[in-house]
Each structure stands twice: as C-alpha cells, then as structure tokens.
Picture: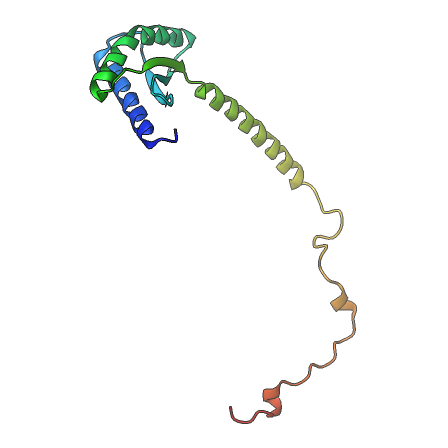
Length: 161
C-alpha cells in the first residue's frame, strides 16, 4: 500500500479483527487461528484478511466456516471503531505461507545434502597440479639480482634537511 493512511487503517482493521476473534467470538472451531496479514483495496471497500490455522486440514475447514459466520460481527465492529462512512467488505483468505515455507525448507535441505556430498568429495581430493599454481619459481632459478643503487641518504647527497 503506497498510501500511509491506508496502511494505518489496514493495521487497525487487523487489530480489531484479531481482538474480536480472541475476546468476543466464542467458537470452538476457530482453535489456534492467527491473522497474519491484511490487504485493503485502494477505495477501502474491500478488505482481505489472511489467516493461518495450526492443525490438520479439517481444522482449516472448520476455521474457514467459523470465520465466514463471524464476518458480519467483525465488519460491524470495524465500522464502529474506525468511524468510517462505510464498512469495508471483509474477506478471509487462507494464507499460503506455511506451504511455501515448508517447500523452501525442503529445497534448503536438498541444497545442504548436495553441499555435504561435495564437501565429502573435496576432502579426499588432491590438486591436479601444484598446490599453489601461482607460485613463481623464477626467483629460485634466476641468477642473483644486481645490487640496488644506494639510497640518497646513504650517500649523503642531501645534507641537512
């Protein structure tokens, strides 16, 4: 959301909805439900609340039914507390974050396994050539270098400085 006012209103809607679900709506089907995010349309007429549920797929479907039933109460409370001209339509959307995070964890586990395999191969490997291919061997085989010219201080050319 580019508009800072819309971002504040969206966060307030998220807070109001979470408080309503926690304190006022007594539905055992909600279980361990968390409101994870909110998206408010540009004209503020539609509000999508993202949620996650701790549990199996039946817990997800029970929570979705309970949220659908409590939608009107939450919308009424949002319009009362925010004193808006109109109450935004509230839509609950199951958050896909847990599935995405588990998929990313699986990919990271595969990468770690490949890295361990490569590290195991590298442990017993030896260099194809010398250990340091950039080591210059010319200094060991070349004749002694000519004497460097004496510094000006050693010759005393500059006197007192």
